[in-house]
Length: 474
Image (cartoon, rainbow, N blue to C red; front, top):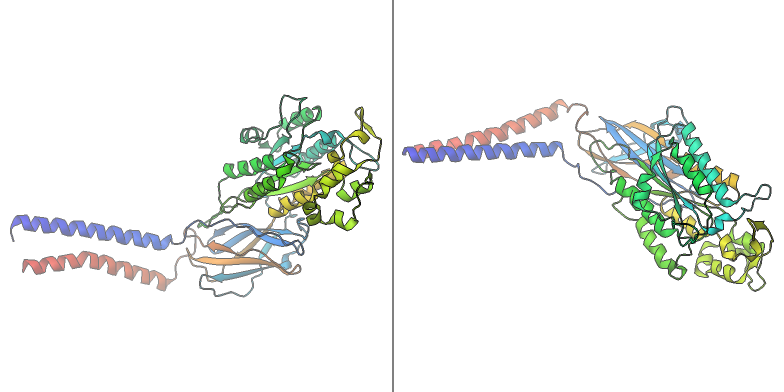
């Protein structure tokens, strides 16, 4: 063989050897990192008849798994009084082999040791004209706007006292007010500019400004709510992913405080709500919880306290959400009933005001909250509004569960759910990936097999080309 052929063959062998080694290294690395793909963030709806439990986040440190769990009642109210023995972990591996129920270590949300996951909260404050009326308190009626602002201040004060790690953005909403320069438009820019730590002194000035505002806008609930939800998602891209060590995601919350119903282009309300619903239920999106607060009378009480001689409705009809929506009972009450009272508020004779300004769309507000596992409340006085907002604040607190994953192996996936024994509730099942870094070392036989396999691959990659080369030389 001449020198040119020898040199060419040597170069070919060297090139092949480098490529084989590179491929082998990449293969070994892929084995270590297998399964770190992202997954969809899913959230099961609560069953109104029984309540629900939801795993909202997880982390792993070696074989130790930590879960954050939210438990809601049949009315979507947070349940915070469960005990250590009320929880069980059910887990299975990728082959479907289940383990016996595990008793986790539980940190209660009311415990001094409990950690609250940071949260971004947007409060949408209705600035429509109906907020200038008195609420229906029998002992201490207040102008609803003032009652709402005082309740928001109580919310902020409580969050400060409890030193909760949250940011808040207060956004007024309404459109078509001829007495103000602004239509209280909610935009991503305004939400971002006003998103401040809960202890910011700016909130006091902001609320004082709103209290002095002469409200006269109409009610547009859906577009501002859609904007707020989209803003929170875009500011907090999907982080609830199946990685080797998934940090607890920031909680994203919208609180919608309104005393009315959506009357913007009312003839297309159904289509507008369907669009909003699609946004709230969007898959592959960061979950956002929407709490709704309807400040005012129920449709039944409004009907009883009004002159409705031209409209005969039963209590069953006025308390059935589906009937109210399909029969358009709110529109019927608005068109055929008038106020009985003769109360004056700021020189306004309320008996002359369209009764539409006193209607709260409880069915829609309830539906919005349920779609996102939020809480829905319908207080009729200022004190009850403040209490409801503080209950929303309590929903940021969750249970923390810790357990050792049986037979944990690095980079392997396990499926886990939480069972609440006394409530007969089971959470959504989630896939959990045990971390690669920080895990216990592989067992001796596993390390030996891995070493032997690597040695064989590198040995064949290095020896075979030279064997073939030597045969050609002979």
